[in-house]
Length: 144
Image (cartoon, rainbow, N blue to C red; front, side, top):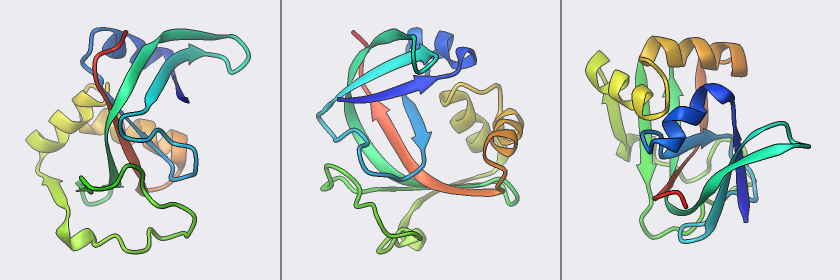
């Protein structure tokens, strides 16, 4: 079972169901569509369980904070993205769903537990030290 840990700032949004996805670095071991997900907060050694859910969808995602663009590529056939080679081989970013413009970017950021796009950009700048982040968007359903 895949487990995802969240900072305390995201807990209220997860518990009320406003935050139903997470953005993570590409790696092996992420949830698979239809597979269980444990959501938790706190330290790695003393986690507090927020609940269990099921992965409903996976997507490649690119966050470009310099130009204000979010690109998502859903692959409805894939149960899990293929990881292992840097640069996301085979990802056709031209065929992605693109979010541009402040209203869409703010909505996306709010669905990820942030106040707005600027809040998300500040968080990512401190956490990841990159202006463009490419990774995986993992969505889940109701939390039990």
